[in-house]
Length: 508
Image (cartoon, rainbow, N blue to C red):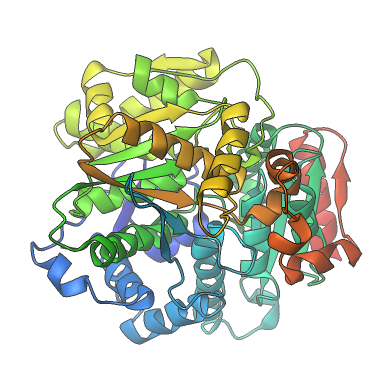
């Protein structure tokens, strides 16, 4: 069963869009996110059929379920996938490593792409999709002046920006504008974004928080006239193609685990995911819903813990302000992708599979969140969330402690970045509650530790023999500090100021 038609989470109208439409549009004009109305269910024999596929072959199988051959024929899809993952340093793309055999904790390394972050897995693919669809559309247009172009606008708390830029740099008919909060990304993250010389790339340092940047992006998408004139597209995890691309590594790591522990292991599998905007773990929800035998998806949050609080209390409530932590990519007040999950739960529990009514209810919840800063979900929705998910909150002090403990204990002196450390700390916490060792834990490592030098050094500088430059920093990243930066400074979080810069740069 395939699911190649899409709708908005907030729409009460009958509508059906293609995969191409949702990729190129990004955010629905009603403010909602695009979702497939149904999630395909895999045949019972899929594990046996898929277990020996490589990453690229597996990606094709999964993506084919969500992309019609009208949008992308088989051969073209294979070429797009091969092209996207040829840029990774590891032949396995996302290798699974044993972190603690005794506690059955495994680490899924997602940082082997061009920018050393998990977002490369999706954004290398998304960049190629944009170029593919634009070429497809422009073949039908004879005059150069009428050819379609796209203006990609995104907000980042660190890694999305550089991954988007590296996925889109030099792409024909694509301009990319990335907003990031001034002083709230790591130096290497900023250098990765601002030292790219391709003229279609623009970085905007905005005085404010990540949520301010995200709000500006959403306002730009909501401006129909601006969108019509400049063809605005999305690279944040609001773009459905990112979620789709991330599903592959849940299946792939499951099959890797079977080979590491033996397929007759018989133990439950739990995925532990450092979570901010909820996109990474949402891909796991789709994998689980399709039939991957996952016991639990465990949300690992930092002290900005809206998701942990929701699971514990059933109330989705933004806190007063974003707390700056050692894991800045997770420093958010609102987890944008969470509404995709809520749409399915509302549809299943409150509307008897009525798409339109689910959209109406979710829209009312999101309106309440915007006006009051919170909403309380129906008990049936909360209970279903608790059946699929669990959660844990990790402090800055625990993050530092975990980086040091893993470095000390691991035979190869393994170094975690602070986000990955939150996942590992959560894995250790849940393993401690499971003395019978009934589960294997796959913890998602989301970034290379070199991207967070200050935090890693804080944890390890006192350890004898440790050297950041020697043990952590790749040669490729060392060179960034010598390059010239290209930045537009925005001295207040103003959508009008950002629009002015976009128009100016496009004019150039």
